[in-house]
Length: 314
Image 1: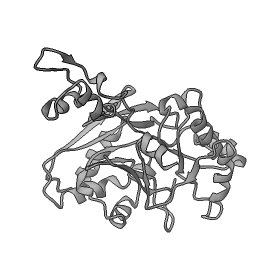
Image 2: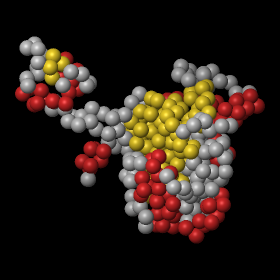
Image 3: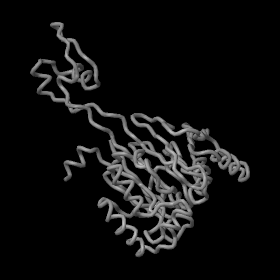
Image 4: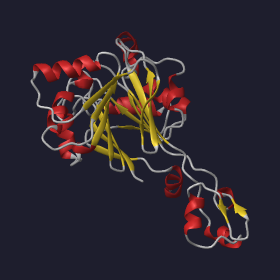
């Protein structure tokens, strides 16, 4: 089952040529989950040839303009086709008012159901087929959420040779064992899944953090993530400015990644003060703390393999 992240926008505060405002799309098989929706989101979706009709949920970190100005366009775009499933929008307080007022003022034609859920407490905010999305509080100038997507644990590897040794005949009984059920053989013997399968395998985990000050305990929310997309808005020499505006430096993002023992850290939400060449400074500073750091780029695709597949590649 494929999982991949698409970087739709990397900018903070204002868009620049080639740098849309912050937005990340996570695709897990056919389901698309959108995290923030800054200005220019539609452009990147088109460039990446993504099936935007499959977007099932928009998760909003907070209601500052550079994270939500793309939502009205997505809502109107979704009305250009027949849509049977509702579109969920999940975020902190004020997101419901923002969406409803935009629909009203712009007199949008909406031919599908929009379900808006405002988060009051951290925890599981959405459950899909085989995964859960958790929200946790960040510390910004207004209510702000971070998110993780965590897949359920998967069954272990099935060993046909062990089944044949017992012996469990080929056929439906093998399928039942692989699905976690005990089976009874003709002689009355009961066979359990652990007799023919390896240990359960962990699912994948994706983390999204943007617009927050560095605070103790933040890393616990993204512990062992396979991919963490985290703002690295400023360089070290702007740490006082970052604290005043309640943002992270790239080094602080790297500290979160290191403490959380994530596999990879992608920096995002860059200050417009940095040109493309100057972003290398953010990267080099972060790498002094966490080696597996990279700069995200608009229209970048990042595969998120299973742990055993990733290990096999190395």
